[in-house]
Length: 360
Image 1 (spheres, rainbow, N blue to C red):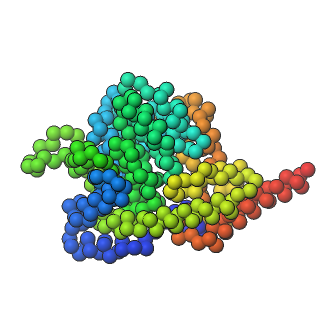
Image 2: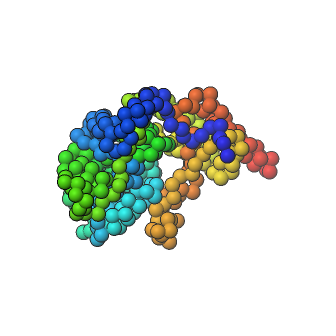
Image 3: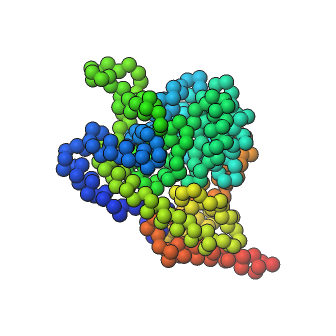
């Protein structure tokens, strides 16, 4: 169905059409076009690191990062239980094994549990900045140093959170803070890692381009047209983050004090506005009837069929998955739009309270 208030829409208020038209008119529509390099350089500069490597998605960014670090069969990568499944899939694509770590009450990886999951086969810690909340990177980097591990940050939902790991990977899907429709980008301070990721994303061609490929690689390239849109988006990122912060603040104040709603901890950048809701499915149906789209939280990785562990119901991640959802976080929302959403949430719970009083 069509929702009046969507969970997310891209904010295309800059030079997207201008740059895209320039790319098409130039004839450079493939990965060889100049917008790719411009985007890589400017995205890296924005994040305070030396190198950017653009690619076809956030998932492929994670895969490239792990491959560049030499992750493969026999290795283990520590992955949060509470994340989108692509985080774990990237590990599996390399032939390594994802080892899951439960979440803390902010939904991010529980740092206090990481050390107990480290084994002689552990090679990488992969924290995810869930819904825009920065993980405790100081503690994670300290553990990585103590155990000689590498760190790959899954920053798909956290444009604007400055990276500190060996590699950080961002998604440019249409619902992300900035977008290219589809796409991803890795950033790093290591020239060697950047070169390796660029080599792997482009089928590992030799310098001679003689069609002898010495390693298994991928066609994970970003097109010049996607990069044109991404560059225009990057030019607006501070404006977009400011708008999203205003949305977060308005929801915080409007939802405060509603019995049945738990407002989640603040975010460093707002990707999605997440809450916990009693009678979640009833609330979602009520909001759907009012033209308001919502989405439930991620499910624990240990509940996924390919990683199934029968003990998943005992996880903290399972507790949050059972009643969590996020509300429309479209940057085009006005305060009036948000008041409509907030009002409907309040109406739902007030009606429930009235029903309970009647039954008494």
